[in-house]
Amino acid sequence: IATANVDVTLAVVLLLIECELIDSGRNNWKFHVNGAKAIMKKLCPSGLSTEAPLSPLRRSLISNCLTFSLLQDAEGNHCSSMPAILLQVIQAGSRVFQQHYANHHPRLCNASEIHEQLLLLLSTARSFDASVWATILQVRSPVSDIHHRKLVASAHRTAVCVYLYRIHLSLCPDVELAYDLELLAAEIIGHLSIIQPSDALFTATTWPAFIAGAETNDSSRQAWAMRRFQELWEVEPWGLMRGAIDVLDQIWAEKRDAAVVGKRQNENWLVNLKSRGDDWLII
Image 1 (cartoon, rainbow, N blue to C red):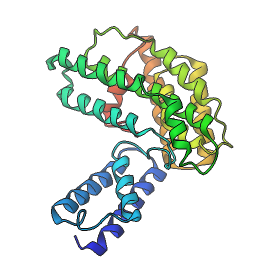
Image 2 (tube, rainbow, N blue to C red):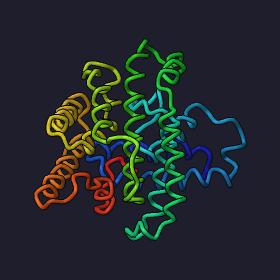
Image 3 (cartoon, rainbow, N blue to C red):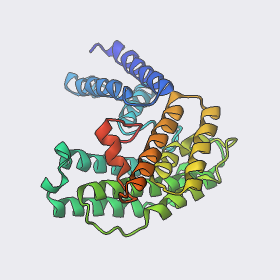
Image 4 (cartoon, rainbow, N blue to C red):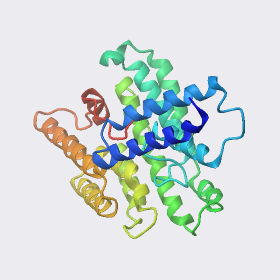
């Protein structure tokens, strides 16, 4: 790849990802992510990444491409304000899920090994200190928003735990969880409810709000999630917000149908999403 073309190419890839997210936020954006990864792999053998220090522009472009491989954006200076350590935990959990859930036969997996891997990831997520993270990040923030960043980071921490617990249950169905997932969904909503549409970090509530909505079986909390995404649509009219509403409606409909036929209330919504190939920014 010619040096002069690298930045332009990465910028175009990012634009395509943004367009897919504006359109629906479901599935197609990942094709562009894979293209960005291929380009960045070529940067290393070609020597373009080591000939000279990376320019601020290229660092920003590569950073955005990498974080899009996890979800919409990333840490403090991105709109989702997702702590980097939690992104890494999500990525590791997703890798476990994808490696051991081949052909939807979880009992073929090494349950003991998976159990230990996921317990370690859960411990890492739970030990994340939102207050310390927000305090450190405040130095780079253009405004004094430490309280809201603590709330957003706390919501992300709990949402990551829910995500990992759902992976754990899918691969080790008989595991006894240390926490009630409904209470964790309520905890997420408690953090996010303080962040209002007029607040700068309002759009940073998107991913944990989706996790809370997908997890909860409580009709009032489901109604909160629906209102939240309608408000997010008004603030940032991207198709991914409408996509979230459609996916949540489908998850809740499946829960209602399961209740009618007497299935367990905690049918795994994450597995159902995976089986349909419906990603909505879920790894």
